[in-house]
Image (cartoon, rainbow, N blue to C red; front, side, top):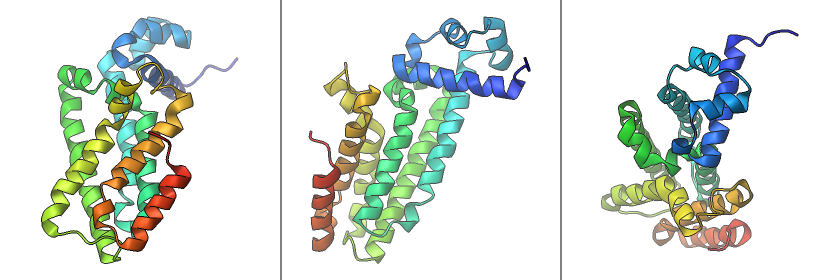
Length: 219
């Protein structure tokens, strides 16, 4: 039987670690559990990732790459339908790495590198939302006073960042289970977009209501 390459083994370790972190929460997953789930020795795990923080940092780098691909599309958003897709895509990426948000305060308190990187993620999210608002303003989809752009963008980023925490507190036993994911993500997208409702052109506001009715999960 051909041996797996070190690169493939390292990737498999990350895949299984992400699954365990998402399922149980990072603080509840030890390197011993990870190696047992993989069917490898702890020494083999440490060969690729000598510390648990290295696993976390490697997963965060994957998350950043996926996130930046979506954020890069912000300046192409021109209407409510574009924005709906944009925000839902952001929530899907967040869901894929939900352990980062579920255990955010704990992770940041223990990992200085992650603390700095997450601050930069917030800056990039806020910049992307500002670009989105600018594009929708140019197209006539929204009419927003320049003085309201920053607080509105910040509020949208707060919802984007803490929505899954809200879902978890509201229903700890079920909210972060895969069977409930789609409803949680749809609710999140709807609530982010609802922050734009006061600024939307009348036709766009009606379209948002139609989208919410068609795709929005009940609260």
